[in-house]
Each structure stands twice: as C-alpha cells, then as structure tokens.
Amino acid sequence: MREVPRNIDAPSRAPEFALTSMISYYGTQYITGRPLIAIITCILCNYIVYRITIGKPEGAAFRLMYKLGGLGKMIPAPKRVKRFEI
Image (cartoon, rainbow, N blue to C red):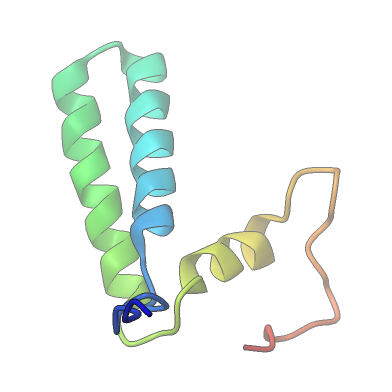
C-alpha cells in the first residue's frame, strides 16, 4: 500500500490569489489598455489580499467578497448574518 503524503489536505490560498490576479489584471487591462499598469495593480491587489487574510482560515477572502458584494442579483449577500460560520 502506498503512503499518503502529509500535505494532501493542506490549506491553499492559490484560488484566492488566482482570482484576485485575473480580475485585477484583466480589469485594469480592459480599462486602461496598458500592461505595465495592469501588472502593478495585480501585484498591489495580491498584497492587499495577503495582508487582509494573514492569520485567517482558508477562504477568508472569498467570504469577505461575498459578504460585501454578494453575487450580483443571483444570490444577494445576507443582511441579517453578521459573520460567516467557519
């Protein structure tokens, strides 16, 4: 029988950083059309997400984005829930 690696269920912040990178880069690229400004904005946004989520559980950035903005008109952010259950 093969051994299971220890870090198989290790938390990963890769999805949070990937989504932040894509939205900030392509959004800035679409608005300004300048790749250098888009790369700088991408780095700054990733740094902000890192600072906000430091010491918090995995998915904290997604919870914060959902609480502040919701998913448009598809699923509105809950007004009566003060904090998300973790």
